[in-house]
Image (cartoon, rainbow, N blue to C red):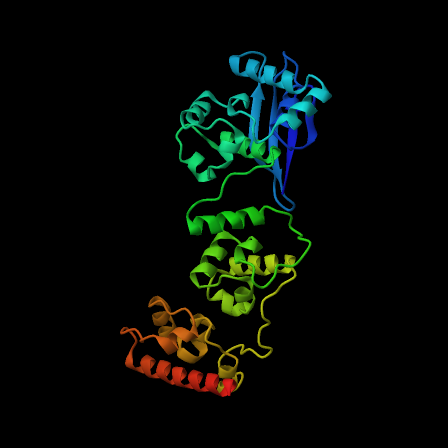
Amino acid sequence: MERWILLVSAEHAYQVLGPYASELDRLRALGRLNGNQSGNVLVLDVERGKYPAIRCVTTRGPSGMHNGRNESNAKRATAAPGVAQDRRAAISPDTRIDELHLKPKALGIFLDNGLKTLRDLAALPEAELWAQHGIGQVTVEKLRSILHSAGLRFAPPADAVARLHWENRQRRAEVLRPAAPVPDDAAISALGLLPAALTAATRRGLKTVSDLVSYTPLELAGVMSRRAVRDTIERLRLFGRSLQPESPRRPNGFGLIERSEYLNSLSVRTPVKELRPLLGKRATSALRAAGFEAAGDILSRSLPERLSERDRVRVDRFALELRTSLETRRA
């Protein structure tokens, strides 16, 4: 995903001013509007295959206090190319917060809490800023861009689960084509999975890439949604990894292959919903309602009471056959 600046005015019409690198680029775009002209400066998130998303809009009219402040900021940013470069180079971790032209309420919150420089601000998790009344999306986006210009970023959350999702978002925002594949002992957050996929995999006990790639797509479908499975496969492909291949002979319905051959293609991680040809619709629904997710749960847990006598006999028979098949394959 890339971020671009678009200038919209009666004089310039629609004019793309190039990629957005920092707040100074937006202020320089404002400087292209003269004092008697109205116009908009849009910051767009551009991603291939999707419509551009408007991240920030700055409207400037012929008068007003807000427009006067924008004009002064634009003049300072566009006074000369050398000055603009000096200002951009002057942003460092020791830059004072009161020099960033923030909203007075947000600036007051930072100063009241003893935050004076960008280095102090980078010690805070981004979630703490969102929790403050008076600090909105525009301010957070601006601070994130300024910290990036200074070679900093917000601190990760203190909570372990929130930190995992934070690392996942950071990785997902990086280049879509990494240079080297991830090792087996890397955390699954290094793949940049969807939050739903990361949550489902973590709840299942998958911690490393090695744990994840030991699953087949069908087994993974019993853990997370199909959309999450597709995204996981795509992310693994970007890092040169893949899930285990499916068995070459899968039944397309009950009775197409021998029952013993069907059992030999199953594992303890096979989703319960895929056992419907053997267990029946009612038994499968009752097991899933009781929290049975994989075939291994049938072997290790007590069957739910809502199962009818006929379904209970069918499930017991399947458990015995599956346990025998697994022991035979291990021998």
